Length: 418
Image 1 (cartoon, rainbow, N blue to C red):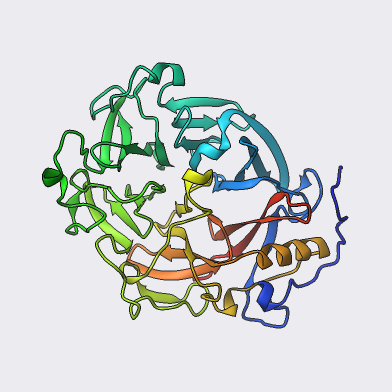
Image 2 (image 1 turned 180 degrees about the horizontal axis):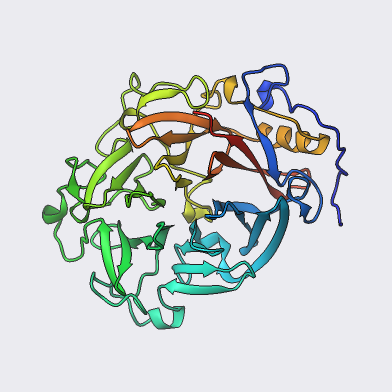
């Protein structure tokens, strides 16, 4: 087993002080367990091995297998945690800084959407091989600049700029496609019987400003508006998630998430597409899983690890088997979350040092939000850049840099208790 840097001291201990993310003397801090990236070993036991590279995304498969995607000099690496062991494989043919979102599909496949380069949706297999599932190659699309309308054959369709991807329980794929004319807008689409079909977003091509300035996500829309009548005209990053009931969730305009229900109607889920959130309605969290009231009255900031335009990925947006929606939201304040969201647990010396270092580097508070099917909101965790869920376990990924300036990722998990 190869090692890098500090050799781990295998002494179980609590983490750190509340100012750095955990209080060993405070019983109310959130209990976590290090899953991966908490050491200096090259592979082997995941909790004691390193994960290096810029965090791109994290997903859990239907069997609970955890996968982390990282980028180093545009190269994409797929890290897999299975049976508490960590392995990695280089993914050839995909520029990691063009990945907008990843999603787990059936079996062991991972799907990624690309917002530039060859674009489209690509399937990644555990051995690192890739197949383009939606879109066309670069040489072909040079001669196909016209956007493709609904009803067109999906195979060979020109869908280059994609800003989100999700795969439903019945293996239907959804993706968010950027359109540039007459203004930048998004169409959230799927493939039905081999044909492209839009489920959210109005195609504005050929319309005058007077014609399309109706129901849109930048100014709001009546609850229950058909998804194809709502213009998604505010923002580029559109993370997607598919719910177990057939609902499709989309983060629009950075400050809201909407749902397209199985009947095709659109509803606000969290945030406010048409205006600002009243500070009196934006109830601060008290402790993990505590009810904060209606999600539609809460403030949300879907930045994730940053904008895809700077080579970073969208915010996390995932669902569980019960229909709960989880997402990451960045607060401008560095003291928004109370100390009840500090991390505590039994860790060894190396894990403690990495957790202290990673928390000390954070300049704003990131909260992990949960919206229940009844619309109620809670902040379930904090201080993480990506979230994944499987069963009763919540996985939290935190990005940081080590003493040598190398980008790293550490992953922990905590029990879903409420």
